[in-house]
Image (cartoon, rainbow, N blue to C red; front, side, top):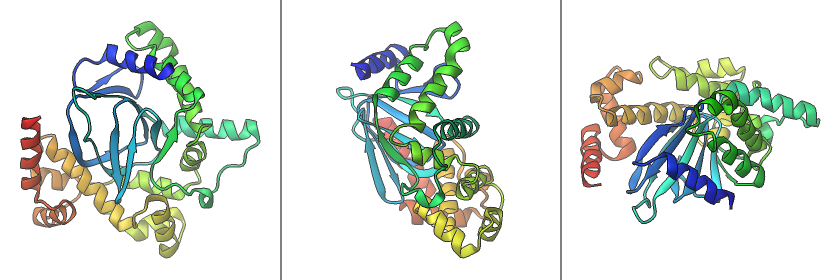
Length: 297
């Protein structure tokens, strides 16, 4: 079975918990043999594939649990809570993280729609919000296996890596998540452009009116379309992106004040108030809890 082959390939490459590079651009392998509680995170444009075990993510209260039956497709930056709460030595988690190149995905989307005669999906056709779980199909499984067979082979990675990665992208764009992904990478998708702008400008003041103007919409229309695409209002989305990013920085060792400034807060006290309102703990309490869990794991 292809999924068993994929699992064995990952196991042969990663021998301790965490993430490792494969040498293939944007492709990483990961393993977890102990539970990791859900914590603030940012999902960048990517697909996440689970070969063994299960992973969990929550976006604005909606819970997604995926395993080796479905992969996660996230074509736009999204603030989530994510973890591996069921991982254990008896039920380890093995998976693959593949970054989605907006340029390549857009080019391939145009090629697919032009050659097949399919119309470009319109914004109104997108019913999925934020992220989507898609079933593994034969094309996706085969493309992923061929990609992972390059791991550890320097020459093959250099010569074939980009081509095999395009095969995976093609399988995503033509699979269950295809319309969702093609719509998201459509250069005419003003909401996707707005999300990309927010993601890369967290340190600077972000005006909702400015975002609406950049999108060529009235504030009311922008608010409605943005919430339809992300489940959150623009203001809520910006705040959650900032808080989640700051939480990740703190977990990596930044001080609270450094993390607050890094995502655009001028006042550390305001940051701490909003952090506690969102996560139920002050930044220092949250950090202590994270360290205590890490020490016990």
